[in-house]
Image (cartoon, rainbow, N blue to C red):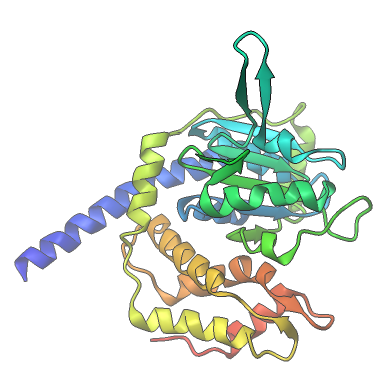
Length: 317
């Protein structure tokens, strides 16, 4: 009993230390994106869960600012791709060229070979180029000319997109949406935050790195050690199962979505300084993690249906 208490105490101390470092990371991102603490918290949660983030909203809200600030706050490599209708898969993955001096074929890696890949306006390129990221996002590797090459760790795709009803967009297919752990909408700032934005000269200053690659990998490993009780797993699965038989949904959440919500709940617990998940971790993240994984059959959005399901599902005590 004494040994168990000592282990629990050590676990709480470790979780508290990691939570403190994560608060510094959140503050760093918030210096560029004012008044959007919730969107920043979701982005950091996605990073810790080793997931990919899709930021969807109207132009000028701060989608790219959030993506850049998160990438710059960690001492890792990052690249940005501006997706356009004429972008080719080789512009993302890389290309093999013949070197006349050595009489050999050399591979020139594309921007995907980095830690943070900012895919700006991903739905403005064709499905062919969009699909170039499928293997990278799911298996963290790319296959080119019969060669399979691993991507650096950590690896995260942060993509932005305009709503699907805007001109010149190609909606992401369900298979690609399912690769994103979360879809986040930033929304308009409140009056006070917008007043600060208007008064600041030029673009917001970019914060420097506040976390090293080693620290990030240590915290990501710590997330995997967070305990999730069986009752919470059953609660999570009940939510997922209801999406598969809800009359307003033509397509429910896949097992990949169940895994994503589980990992996100673990990350949320650690951010709060806990080594165990609680029902609120699942409930708070369900809309962001599951809303883009369902196909509505009526006028209600996926997020709205998930909110209804949450209201109907019994929360474990």
